[in-house]
Amino acid sequence: MVLLNLYIVYFVVCILSVNSTCTTNNDEDVRKFPLNFAFGTATSAYQIEGAWNVSGKGENIWDKYVHKNPNVVIDKSNGDVACDSYHQYDRDIEMLKELGVDYYRFSLSWSRLLPTGSVANVNNDGVDYYNNLINGLLKHNIIPFVTIYHWDLPQKLQDLGGWTNPIIQDFFEDYANFVFRQFGDRVQHWLTFNEPKQICLCGYGQTTFAPGLNMTGVGDYMCGHNLLLSHARVFHLYDKKFRIKQAGSIGITIEGTWSEPFSSSKEDFNAAERFMEFEAGWFMNPIFSIKGDYPAVMKERIAVNSAIQGFSKSRLPEFTEEQIRLLKGSSDFLGLNFYCSTMARHINTNVSSEPSYEDDANVYSYVNQSWPHAASSWLTVTPWGFHNYLNRIKNLYDNPEVIITENGYSTWGGLVDNDRIKYINLHLNALLDAIKDGSKVTGYTVWSLMDNFEWQQGYSEKFGMYEVDFQDPSRKRIPRKSAKYFIDVIRTKSVKHYDPEYYEINDCTNSVYV
Ligand code: NOJ
View (cartoon, rainbow, N blue to C red):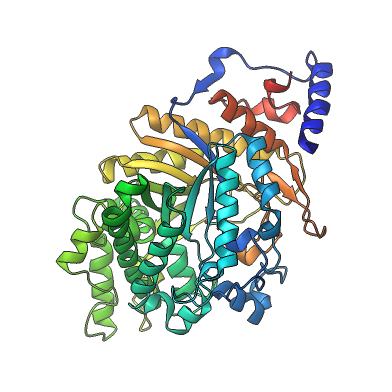
């Protein structure tokens, strides 16, 4: 309702200025998306829900990590209240309706549903919450696209070793079975995991993410191994027990960063390839490649370094033939989170005596300061890298169906977010270029619906198409200019060629309002 009124103001402003600053682009500037192409936006449970200890929710690793170590978050904030979506989900649905999205990607909080992580102890309030959200979405013809795990492991399971303990595979399978039974009659689009590399590298190899185990070159690989096997088990569980009855599909979301060689030398080219294999390839290769298993370069390098360091076997666990078979093809589509690119340079380093993922990968990877970037220091604006990355997937993995499950831009705030519009516009153009080259991309998701808890960056970096007032107890949400831009993209199923001047001078982004 509030937004409706805003539209009217917008409408009037644009009519008044249509002959001055509001230029409309020519028809030939418009590029159409395929008819079956879908648009959505995304969030995750810990980043938006809040209500961290109410209505029976159990503690998870992020609750514990940020409460114990407030200094790991730049503004010493946490997700205790976040956007308060546990109480404000009606407003979230209203916003999604305003945007006109085809689907909403959100995640389930494992410890809200199963406070100790185990199916022996169900929290019915948590089940009610997600039932209400799912039913509310469906009522407005918004497809729920559900991530089963987006980084918030129940703390009790972490106490057992978390993703480093093979027992986690049983717990994850039981949890997935539980959510398929509870919600699968209405949810037909599933993702097992969001960004495995970040879960394992940042959470078990470093201290950047919960649980902050800090065991680089060991904990990260153990985590990755159990995570991949858990993924395969849940894929096959869905396949055997639920697919026919629930008629859905299930995939995994992996983040891909394009790595640009520093020079045309063979060494730099190999360094860039190695970077991509150690990052996304670590998880994509076992699932999407024809041969399966970890990328050869990972297996070789980690085995050699482990031997030098005196380990009796490689620090990278080995799959059995049966496990390789179970993993291969265990995804109906590839969920790709793409944000940016980095540079890669060859380096000559001696292996240190301590295990280290960095040593194993042995790439000097850095942000090219001359590329434009967002508020987040890592987030460079490289749509050409997106195009390259999609082509790489097409060529390397036999052209799987790809859904862009995240793409987005951070600012320091403000309602007029021309740079975000520019970023989305450029990436949608790159995506269309990739489709033209033959990539099977079927969906595009903006991260994020609204500002939320950006992990270590707290509430300082804003990714939302809706601004959230974190000082306001009701966490008021207001649409940014990018929300209006996205409405137009979805409504017309088209995007305009990027016109650098257009967004600079024109505050009436979309002709839809005039
Ligand atoms: C990827 C993660 O899935 C999401 O949680 C995060 O907020 C965005 N990237 C932005 O950093």
